[in-house]
Image (cartoon, helix red, strand yellow):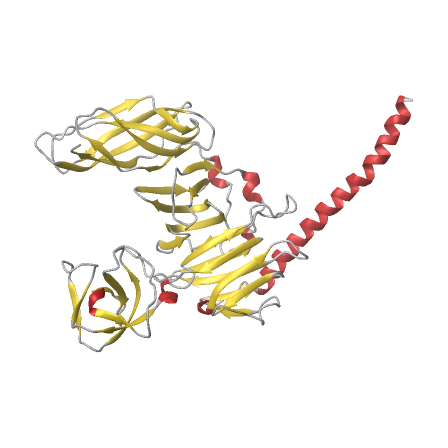
Length: 449
């Protein structure tokens, strides 16, 4: 009886096992077909072109549906694209490729796949014409204390693309490529009111798709062979750094390849090669290859909350279609590093004479050895007497001692000063196996409470 029962069970399970294997093979074949189609039709893009790689890609051109973008190899000028939508899995898998030229002339390759929607937020889309109603100087920053670049007469019509946070200054790009600012009270909008994005002195003038908002469906992959929905970005290894704006987050790529995803309330960046610098408030994170940064977002796509840093796994990146990128990379190579990595340190405001203040230190250690020591050595302060350093067993704030956030406990005393900062230090962390990170420049401000 026992033998018969086993035989019957095998007979019942076998058809389902074969079916599951068949579906997985079909899924893998569909993924590969989409990748092969894109490789065959979209690998010779010109500057600022977008290419239809495979089925289920929709575009908005000047905010109207594009009806002629449905055959592999079809191309459109990137500057005409308002939005691009890829539906994910319905009958076939969608991919699109873009060649984006940055404002500093660096070519960037974008590959989008799965359930993704991207909206162009480049400065050029926000151009607005204004009349000069009062003779005005053009300054190289949003304030009359900045250098004067030239003067504009009454009646001149100029194009502006942003305003400062108060709305009192308008940003323009002059004929020679320099960026200037004029007082908003000296100009009026041609053809009625409009709105402009907010920019600071350091905000670049972004070209098409150099600034964007991205949303991706994290749950639409039907099998393990299908990459998670998102976008690959690559800049050449020898190119100068490129600034981008992703869902309101300032990111600078340096010889980088990045995998970007965005859910309803989170932007996720996987650095597959090179480095990327992400700026969120007072925190600047220098993210190395092998690391993932999770950035919480508000409903308005504004960074908020506590960032998380972790190492991605070889299995997670093995399915990404990196073969579609112009430069070959191995996204698992950095995972073999033994030394821990300090990724970012908040520039803390330390109140004088109140004892230790905990400044967060973000880190990752790919080999899984726990961090046992944090060491800092004084480098520079604008005034006051500073020297020496400190070695301590660090306190964990979040995560664990292999990947997370440590506490750097610092204190200061102003003496006769009102403010001292930034006070700069070199920081290293050491793991249980004795591996030491590269020195990282950390700093804090000493302030009067």
